[in-house]
Length: 284
Image 1 (tube, rainbow, N blue to C red):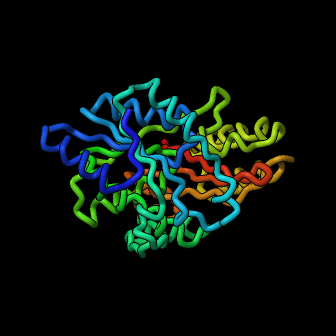
Image 2: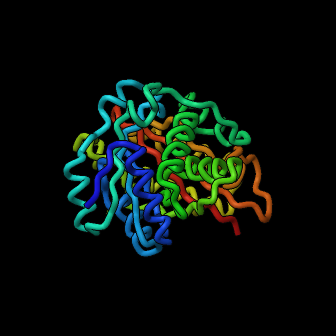
Image 3: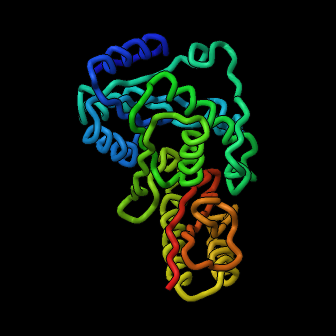
């Protein structure tokens, strides 16, 4: 298994693979890998000659310094999990100073307004950080295909927009949300939940599923009030927001328009841990 710390070394190696006609799949992660991450990697292994997995807790996308400090870092375990999948996986474990050329700061991006909705409102600068690190990773890895989970659906749409606006020859492959048996969307943050909050967290998905049933017949205001009231009544959960938005524009929906695709987006605090989830909504 090859592990690269410095971008120039990886870039040279990738170029040698490209010269051999090898196709490159890429899975960017912040480590603390779980089965959701591994589902992305399995898809890449199936589709491509070579797969690169980056493990990098990117400082520019954290608006909360305490969250950056506490984010789980489990590189040895991550490496073992990847080696079990395939010893041929290439790991990029960047040195932050080298990766950012000594200037750890974000570029500013215009994602046609996608960055101003939902997470953009609640986490200022977050998507500049995401855009910066993903663009830099794409420049180093030069993948043919890159894999992203639908749990971070807004991020997925923003990365598609990044590829479109910068004319990058990369196909973005979305992978459905990977869930625990009790329905909780898999996240590296789940391991930080207390016993009580871990037991409570699957309720989020239960409420999302109920909202999807309501969406078939009820209006949007009714559904939003139902979700807000239901989560607020739970002793161990606190709602930050629930939004029904158009899948393409991510703009909040006030009424259903035939032909448009909608999704329900939710952010809930379980104690100190911020959990996100979403669900496709289909009206009849």
